[in-house]
Structures are given as C-alpha cells and as structure tokens.
Image (cartoon, rainbow, N blue to C red; front, side, top):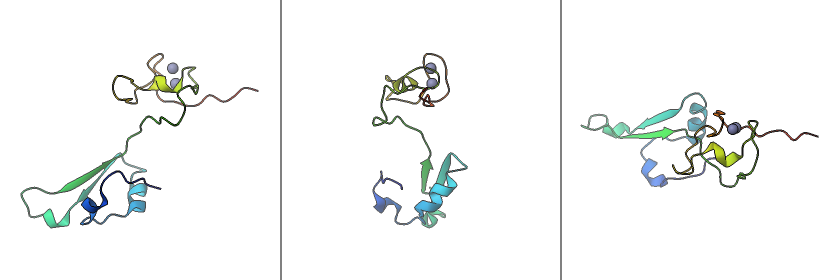
Length: 101
Ligand SMILES: [Zn+2]
Ligand SMILES: [Zn+2]
C-alpha cells in the first residue's frame, strides 16, 4: 500500500510498522519516530513522517472540478505544483464534477 520513497536501511533501528503508520496518519498530520538509542545523546534522532497531498500527473489535467475549473488549476504551476486552492475562484480542493446525463 505504501510506496517506498526513502532508503529502507535508514529505518532499521526504528520500530516501523507501515500499517500502524498508516493508521496513525488517519487522525494526525505528522508522526515522529524516535531512535531509542539516541535518547541519552545530545541530539535525539527523529524521523518525521508528514502527510501531504500532492499533484497527480496521471490523474488528468483537464478533468473538471465542481467549481468549473480544470484539475491543474488547483495547483501552482510556478511552485512545483504546490496544491493551492483553485486560483480562479478560491475553491478549496478538487472535487470532480459528476457527469450530467
Ligand atoms: Zn475547484
Ligand atoms: Zn475554481
């Protein structure tokens, strides 16, 4: 279910349970994994996992939102497709418009 985006070796010392992380992230925006071996050290070693929502290039730029604007317009093309709200009307998030029959 999770796609690995960092080298798994860096997580060896952490009690990582991907299913648990997924569960925990349902209610919070970020998680911290603390390396137990670092607790008496001057710097605690922490891995932070943050839940973010990103542009999906495979979704289809031209799909239409409830607000009437296209999918890609809900992102900032100058800021690495940062998920802004719709730049044209302030719609808070893309919600695909249902086809009218
Ligand atoms: Zn919209
Ligand atoms: Zn809009």
